Image (cartoon, rainbow, N blue to C red; front, side, top):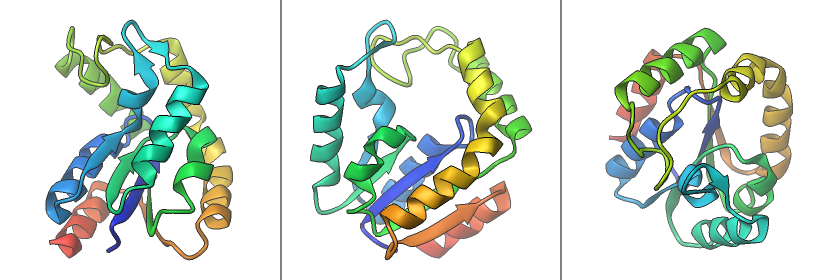
Length: 166
């Protein structure tokens, strides 16, 4: 396993959880892109600030970076030695997003000043994820051709992946 690991996939697939688990197993820092992107009140960061923060995180010697934000693939993929794509079904992702909303009701867990929420835009994103998968795989292959590419489709596959890390 490498020391620069990108974790991507559908919302609700478990990216942040897996990133924390990888970071703990390998004792390397974890960066959650949601925390770099969102300002209080769910206001997006200015694009240049967000890209600069992502570039800074990706330029270090070791990292786990989770999140999609495909407009920053060019900043992460060239440095990644491992790319993990979580590919849970849309039903699993929707269930997990709703469960997270209920569990984190009123909390600021994804980013400072951003109270956990689920809205129509998120539901639409999750529902349309299967259509985005081929482009995502193509972009990963093109942007990180020498990186180890790991596709995880089920909790069992995630568990086996984590076992191999330990």
